[in-house]
Image 1 (cartoon, one colour):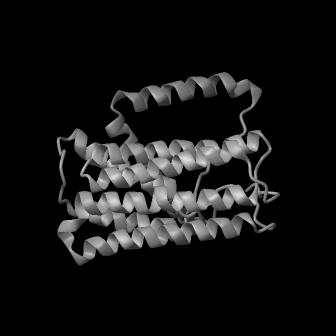
Image 2: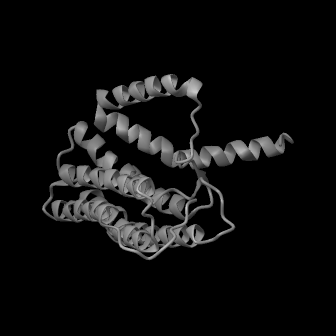
Length: 243
């Protein structure tokens, strides 16, 4: 995990981070107005800019502690408060206390997840490139794509489905769990496999573009559950005595 080296302000990465914040804030406004599909799309847009700011900072050699703190504060809004508000107004109100507690738990676990991530990033002994716990942008993406999926099925207004309540609780747990999630940041591609990698990326993008509300939701859900699958796989290997 790359550690920021200074407290300097860098305009370009910070502007990308603030654009992510703007998308998250717009999502909250849209949710309050009952425009749930645009609210879900705005969260995905926030995720795109959240991914860009870190990469731009690394490419321009402008990573900083200031940028890391700004990123966390903006993530709290875009991937904590915004998806919780969306889930609550869209599907959790009918469950009364259990509904708003689920939304609160999601916000609280997002804050805990971000605090743990920052503390691990500043630990010089931590060289693991995978995520510990489900990243909050991925959790927010699962909620956003779920809204898009239900909209694809014809649910244009609020819904009531017990699986949504359970999913919010599950995502909250996964964010603060110790399950490992692949980060895909340190993938090394040899020269011999670059062409195959490009072809693979094209095929994946083509697949995602077929029915985005369906494919994006399935992808987000599979990634959210991948930590549990990896934990189970590791447990089985240990039981069999495999290294």
